[in-house]
Length: 223
Image 1 (cartoon, rainbow, N blue to C red):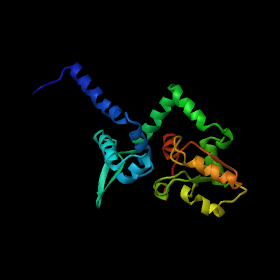
Image 2: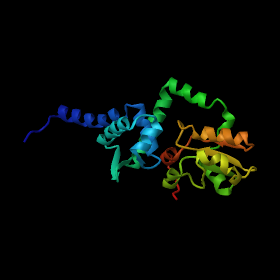
Image 3: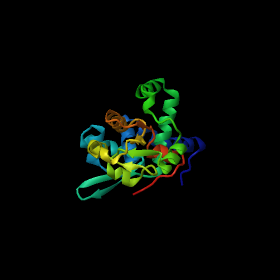
Image 4: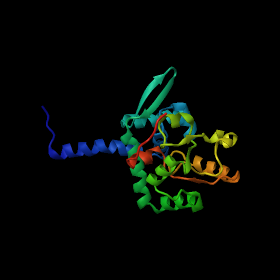
């Protein structure tokens, strides 16, 4: 029986860990993981959201699957993908936080997103949770309804962005609104805040999504 020496064993161990790093070495794959952290998606949906064709999306998802980061199932003629575990979503959050701490370019891009600080929620996560529980603020989830059903911030209301304009009557004008979507790189909450403010609502956004909330050890709710 062949036995590896210590150097060969060490090389093998790092090689296996590097499989994950190689799978993550693509902006589109990172965006796909963020999407799948919201719930399982058909490959066609993933392709549309990340603005590539289905064939290329399938290739990216195959690379993620080979690294055991995602799993798939067949639903009729469709292939549906999901994360292999909650730890994969937390890996995405950790990777982004490390990048933000060390990459000036990313810091500058995020500062551009925060050009209007009055549009950002000024309270921490636990205080926001307490305010939502008391009814002092409305936490507005503007993601698609199926993502809300999979998991959402506690006490959040679901009003998908495409429906927001025609459902404004459901939102009281005298209560502050904090919108959120898929995390700090998601722009749906920016669009929601812009619309709400134009219509006279007191609206802000939070960079948090379900992955950030979960990584912080805070509870999530499910439909």
